[in-house]
Every structure is written in C-alpha cells, then in structure tokens.
Length: 139
View 1: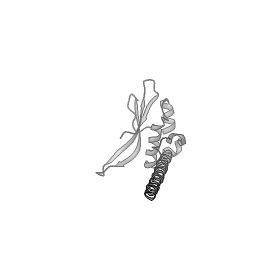
View 2 (view 1 turned 135 degrees about the vertical axis):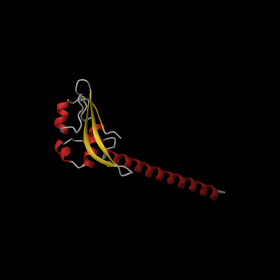
View 3 (view 1 turned 180 degrees about the horizontal axis):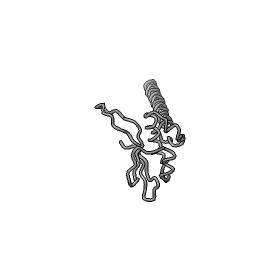
View 4 (view 1 turned 90 degrees about the vertical axis):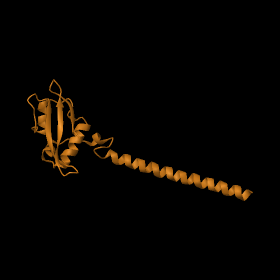
C-alpha cells in the first residue's frame, strides 16, 4: 500500500515538474515574440527607435520607403506640421489637389496576387489651418 502511494506521489511530482517546464518554455516563447515585435515596424516600441532622415527618404528603394511611410504614420511624425515643413521633410508630393487638403507621396508599386501593380502612397491629410491631421498608408 505504501509503494502504491509512493508511486502516485512520484507521478504527481513528475506531472508538476512537466507542467512547470512547459509553462516556462511558453513564457520564454511569448517573451521572445514580444522582443521581436519591439524591433520591427509593427512592434509595440517601433517609434522609440524611429529617426526620420529626409535624405534617406528621398533616395530610398520602394520597399524601404514603404516601411518608413508606415512608421511616419504610426508614430505620427508629421501630425501638427505645416505644409511647408512637410515639403521640406518629404519633398514635393506627387499629387497635390487645388485645395491642398490631401497630399500623396508615391511609395512604389506593390504587386498583388494577380500581378497587377497597385500604386502605394503615403497619404498626408491636412486640416483647415494647413497642419497635418493624419498621415496614412491606405491598404
């Protein structure tokens, strides 16, 4: 009887250890995914390392420009800036309507599954006082 009780006790202890190891591995995996997110354009801390460089923006390849545009949008880099300041940072927009309420900056062509080249743009929206209220990369 004591031997059976001892076996059950050892089995319970082994299950507890196995569960503890599993929980530790899961916590490390989730922590690793969180850490990776910190260093990417979509991570929770993407804006902390974002440092806009106007010369790099103007000479960047389309893929890099897209990533920068997403950070410009996400980090609200342009919000509150005047039209003149936006032009100084990003250059001349590809599309500037007569009213000037929305400016578009070309980011390159994005291939979709049909191999059509959809143009990507950074869309900068101004308020009535001529300041940026939002910048976005439409899907």
